[in-house]
Length: 573
Image (cartoon, rainbow, N blue to C red):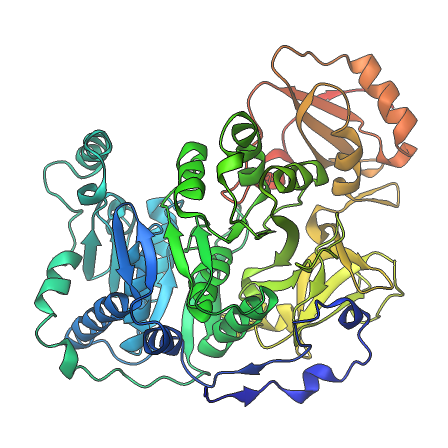
């Protein structure tokens, strides 16, 4: 029987919580959390399901036993290189078996993993490596220039490759990318470089003698970047206890059917959403992870049909892209999918309803942020999810809405304010930034920066980002509310709302939109639509029509900050 420890009692002091009445019958209000470091999940999976397939990538099927063996060899090598407990090791990899093995290897060696995004430019990657003092980075060969070209490159790079797994045509494309980025050298130059495949080969004979370095739940496990596109990212520091708590919460929310589930793992592991919902939750469930390094509709459709996953963590853009493909071909061959948890951006009901119709899956929306490992809320998977909400707080997670100005006054149900949360998954703090930590976490509560409401049933709804709030002539305008109305205007493909500084009003509302192919914007008609459906202070005073798609991050969120300072044609409401 697993050794367990109770959740902190202080998390239960606000009673009753309205959301508990709407929990699925098989989800407890409070959980017992394993008092171990994160490698325990992989070791437990080996003890319980040694021959079960842990992950599938192309034609490779890797059992839990073989996956742990690879992690131990990497850990052994790291210790041989002089890695000390708490030392940081960077990970710059897509969703491959190497990511899972390397992450657990870092933990087994007593190290702290640092997530590096393939979306970084060399300047950003180098700055983050330097800030977190990573001396070793484990990466993909074609991504190695991101860290080697920074001002302070790591001393050591360990690299792997995708080419040996790909089809002949894919290998040609990969070889071309490799040549363009690396020339004939094979890997970007640093002081020392090693091939991961060789490290795994060399460790076969000695791995049994390796003794993992002991870690405690309070030790640092994972550091990842978060923050805006206009400033240096902050480094969220998550402990083993934080990650364990979120993995345990998620696997119980999914029904805790240990050793039975198959997860489609397309969300990137370098982001906390993919890390927790797929990688660590998968280990807690003893699930098989169907991996793919990049979302492509044809590839994902093939994986859905071939491997019949039961759970699919996703973002709305993925579901929107899959719906038309499923409509044309393929939905009849997907019979296993039970649950889809969507996060990262608002989920339109039309998209979720259509995906559910096509696959039979229960599609719910969730919510989280990197500072909370990241998931704090999710829709119930028993049919009681409410469209347009982020669902209910997870077990042992408290949440409330407070006034946005001071953050000290709890607001009545239904009023808009800042969402704050607390629970065992909330971060230790920001790396080497006590001021930012103190601003984000006050009296144990994490201030999310998101504006939302809570109804009398305990369902929460996000209205907007606090920093995206537009204040025009003293009136609050929530861009999400305006977007929800104007996206229904005939012919609109994409639309977002931003605030633009104005001398007399403080800010004015600006609409930036992209019309569908073959459609043109009739400004007179659009303004009439605005007057009919929006209060005067919510109506756009500036309208900009674009021909190219709006800029988005990899989770599908429109990058409003990139659009705020653009100029557009001014019109009267």
